[in-house]
Image (cartoon, rainbow, N blue to C red; front, side):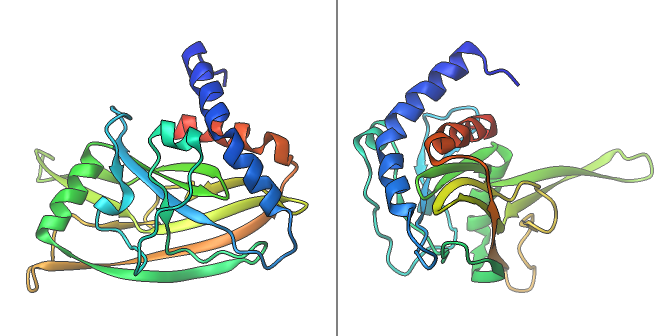
Length: 233
């Protein structure tokens, strides 16, 4: 698919702003197996207005015991990035089976915040070794009922399973995909709290699969930025 002229301009500017941090990351990534892979959470925004941004942990997602701001390049500062540490433990070329990272107990107020974000098509961004990944906060559907399907009910789902597929070439991280399919395996329904408790328990998971990739370290950022742009960056 050809990018429109404006999209190309956005891509060129974004690559230029992130170029320095990616260069540093590529150098760091050229190490033997056992290296800790850095995953940083960034920001959240409505798809229709990318300039309206919020910190990732402004929302009631899983978070570390101590939230630590991450080092950012000047380009990332200009982009308005808000990088912080994450709860995901990843080692270079070490697969991780589906693992629970936390369980959140949502109140009715929490669900209202999350459902509003889902309804307004909020996106979020994270970085894996300097490579951006953009995904939706969740999804919603409209369920019809009644003899003539005249009744409808909105159902809300939250992305609660981060399935990482990380590409490597030699000793460099060169591509990242995460939860390519928004199906029920990766989503938890958050439409209503439990009537008995007034709360809703939602577990969060992640997994990691490493795949060898022909992408070179020098072209990794541009290709990843194109994918992120198509996803809503």
